[in-house]
Length: 562
Ligand code: TEU
Ligand code: CA
Image 1 (cartoon, rainbow, N blue to C red):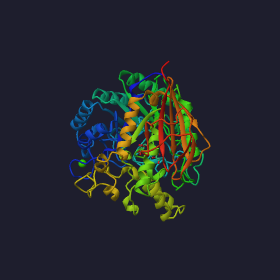
Image 2: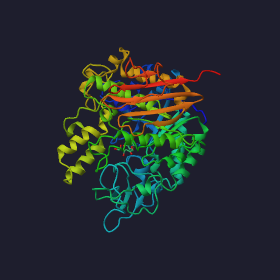
Image 3: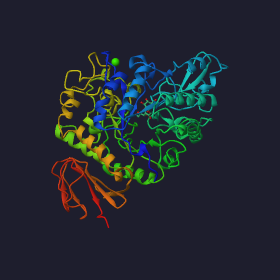
Image 4: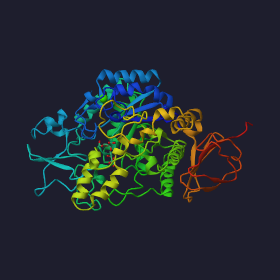
């Protein structure tokens, strides 16, 4: 297996809107991120991934870009970005930016031109089709509810939008579009960025015929997935991008790939380095989906979770590289989802156990802002408290059609809405959590009084310091980065345990991911050894152990030198 800096790194995701406001307008900004660099340095992360800060109408919080080479004024100016990069680099922290090129905002100058006339030079920058029988070109539904096609009156044709109708999909079949994207990427590389997180990059190549898709369960729309996800030319396009831009720099590149399979990942992120360095898969995040996709209260089943994550560990070994994550700006908080946030003790203990379980695996771990404090889901009372376009559209569609009662849908939103990840970072216990002096754009969780960075920095056994130690261990032990993986006790419904092996070393990881005691048989070679890290401070590794609620540990055995 080849060694690489991005395999040894830990990434921290910043959602600029919700991280730190520096000027009292209630919206986080780039100077705010710069001001918090010392905090991230103390945590010990190697890389920051910044969610979008580009010029944008902000209808999907910046994932609708109207100028790829400008900063949205509420986030700052280009000089603020340059200062952030320079100061991060001075602290040894790299900066990865979000590349959103499946679609633009409808306010992008390319789209303003494109919609003017059928023979406009920019017409083919987007995907236009004639309607069929007075309706859209096919039955595809958008990821943000409704049809994936919108009729544009000016020219009488429909444009494709796999997300919101304000996010028209770019036409990657057009070489001019690809040239524009590569030039723009090169421009950011020359500004000093260290990589890209590529938004829904698995969707850029569409099957040109665009046939109807299989009916989405319980919906009047069909799925575009068979004709859009991992589409016919996606690998050709990424190899071209790699030749034209990526290969000229030393970058971390991670593709956000909904619909990813192990076999596909081995192409997107192959060891040969012909496309990207790694990819995000979604299988473990989809385990608690219900009948209406994500809108349910279903809990993940631990055996399914173990099977899924282990399949990725085995499947990519030596062939591609995993990204490890529990949280991002699209997912509810893991401690509220898979852990237990009902008491302060179970919250901290379960957050640590989940962190340990993920961070000892093979792959590059990603931490989403606030995860290192065990921040919980938001405190959303009514529909008015939500901001996310996906949530609001889904509410309208599912309650409007009578499929769900408003109260039922609200309970799903409280559990699963993307807004759960987007409440402001809890820096201290003051009224506005140290996030802003003004009115925050989305409600701050009142539990900031108990859950905040200031309190945890001062307390050695806090979740923050646990994450700091996990990161330091990864930097200290190659086995955590490169060791092979083997799942233990696949049938156990409470314990997630596995073995890592590397150059004569063995690392045993045992995590009770339940609130009840759980028995475990530990091999003699590990018994009596002091754990590298554990969620209790008095864990004694012994043959017939009974793990306490959320008790988890990692223990290392090194063969005596011959
Ligand atoms: O997300 C793509 C994506 O697959 C999610 O929108 C997913 O469908 C949803 O979160 C599951 O509930 C990316 C970005 O991460 C997201 O924030 C953007 O809204 C989206 O693309 C469009 O750019
Ligand atoms: Ca601000």
